[in-house]
Length: 447
Image 1 (cartoon, rainbow, N blue to C red):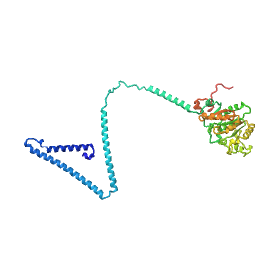
Image 2: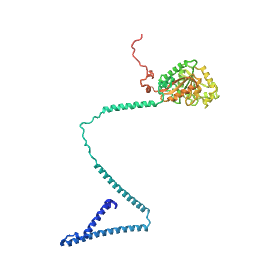
Image 3: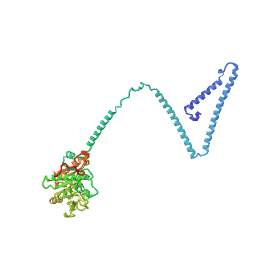
């Protein structure tokens, strides 16, 4: 039964074989040694018969073993004979391969069992080496949990982490957010700001008539921002003699300078001043799109001598007033090459004689150097900055580039100012004109 469970190499089978050999040796020694028999004659015959019977049994065991070996050798010889006489089929080869794999797996399994027994024995010996130094004692009373202290410490720690992250974010943020940031970090006065809302400048509406906020939403906060900006610029122009030309530019694209220029021009027009908007952004013109008019010939065509000066101007009606506009044109030209001559100076001089305010929508000054060529011909530079978008370094570089064209007065306008975020929900920067006027009971009767 043990041989059915284990192989010949297993320690248990080898131990059983040794016990069988020892028993057989002892039986042979007892059968062949007459000195071990009893002395009295009455039992001598019986003992001899017993010894002979034992020897007979041993001989039968050996005979059976020899027969079994003979049968095994005959079976092995038959197998070899069969293999030599007939070719082994693929199925038999696969079977033999599987049998060898099974034998190898059984050997590996037996090795793993022996290793596992050794490991368990070592763990048992290790567990027996544990000594109890001091028995556990049950506490007399439970330890205090100190929950209020832990909550307080958690609040303090959370507050410190939040403040630390806020200071870190502020230190890493290099954008301009408030008018105070512009004046402190750039040294440029702020002429006005435009709050961030659905009507804010820089966010173009798919309907062109809604881009002119003085007409589409005259009572909105954003329209009031442009009126305040117009007033500040009007005062700045009045400080000098014959100051009429304003160039609107920005450090980079996306700051809303074109929409600011268009709404500022419409605000001057509705204020009663004769105004003209000159779209000098020959790379990405947008004045015709904002005003909802058809793209036509303009500045680039005139500089290329394709049209006469009389075809430059177009007019846009605004609530009984008219604002003139010179579009960028339809021709792709190099502005720097064509602006070397006196054409631009002549054009701006003629516009000074015919208009009260001239607003030039120039390209961004950092990627395009065209505004630097226009700077000597203007009286005031309005730099459009977007709150939370324009970086300090870009704005400083734009100011330095503008000053290369001449020492001109530079004013800043902060676009998309987030009033609630920067100044709080109760800020007075939003107008008090929201909602309808409240009806209050009269305290005194009129006579």
